[in-house]
Amino acid sequence: MTRVVVPPIKLSLDGAEVFILEVTENTWVDGTKHYLVTFFIKWRNLRSQIATIDVRDNQELIQKLRAEIAKFKLLVYGGMSNIFQRV
Image (cartoon, rainbow, N blue to C red; front, side):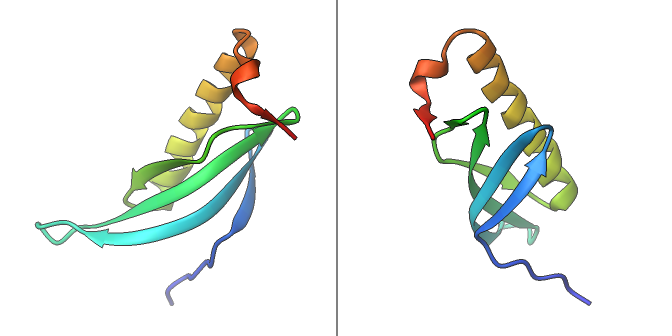
């Protein structure tokens, strides 16, 4: 059975909320399927810009989202919270 998830969805991951807005399926020339995932992160009343990542499966999606959350938190801890929208 194929699992189908229709965006937008909200995930809780590493203490942050990730909002997945869109998932687009693409097939590369060699036949492998990849997905472009459009999302934003919300953490401590701050919201990131909308970003897109390329993934092959759910496991890679979670790994890349964790990396994006870590970058977001580093920017906030580094004093760059003024570049993000307050919510």
